[in-house]
Amino acid sequence: AKAEGRGTVRFFEPEMDRKLQERERLVQDLRGALGRDEFVLHFQPYVSAEGGAVTGCEALIRWRHPVRGLVSPADFVPLAEEQGLIGPIGAWVIERACAEAARWEAGQRVSVNVSPLQFRDRSLPGTILEALTRSGLAPWRLEVEVTETVLIDDADAALDILRQIRAMGVRVALDDFGTGYSSLSYLRRFPFNKIKIDRSFVQDLTSRDDNRVIVRAIRDIAKGLGMTITAEGVETTEQAEQLRLTGCEELQGYLFSRPLAADQLGLGEAGPGRA
Ligand code: C2E
Ligand code: CA
Ligand code: CA
Ligand code: CA
Image (cartoon, rainbow, N blue to C red):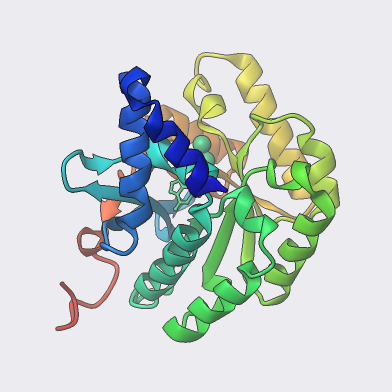
């Protein structure tokens, strides 16, 4: 039915707005991108607020488009979700992230962003288990980052899949915390290992008292529920100090490192297998 729909669109091509045509071309390119091996993972470290050691890295996908260059996930992940392509792309991300992290000598964690749509697919736990088995990565070194949207659509199914993932020993983090709606009830319903405080609260932390109040409240809730907190988007030493004093366990942001190509990370052995 989808192919028919596209054919119909083609028929009206002369009247199509340029942007629509370009979008259609991007979708076509996206369909073949996995097969052409055009995706790449960058890794952004996060550090312990006390001491500054790298405790893990977040895998962030980029698309090396032959013409457009490096395309940011904000420009193609929503498209991939809409076109039903996020399943295979997401599976590739999990596979690659585990394989890479298995080479990190100090046993740092790797965090992977998982789309809410991947939670509509019962095969997700199996995909994760396969990636762990193939890479030999210990399950607790893998962390799945989800946004609370995952618990809105079909909460029961998503919770069931999240529990299966947790049962394997894989960690689960709630991403972008504070940007959604009924955050508190979701925290009660599902025991996340970690909460990531959204960058929007970190940004004005040193100039706005209300953001400080909110971060402190999030910390109290997290502590009470046995979860740790990571602050994302930390760009200044003032923010880092404030967050450390507030009791954030981990910090992430340009202050410490931008997302880096795997071979720039310097966390693993420089063996002959490394490109
Ligand atoms: P996110 O998960 O909230 O990731 C954080 C984003 O903020 C990343 O952008 C990161 O590069 C950027 N960032 C990190 N530190 C700083 C900072 O100090 N200042 C500022 N201004 N930005 C910072 P990126 O890599 O472009 O990713 C954007 C979003 O795309 C991610 O937001 C995530 O929602 C999505 N995404 C990335 N990789 C994947 C993936 O493999 N699968 C899925 N489903 N989504 C992904
Ligand atoms: Ca994330
Ligand atoms: Ca985030
Ligand atoms: Ca975000």
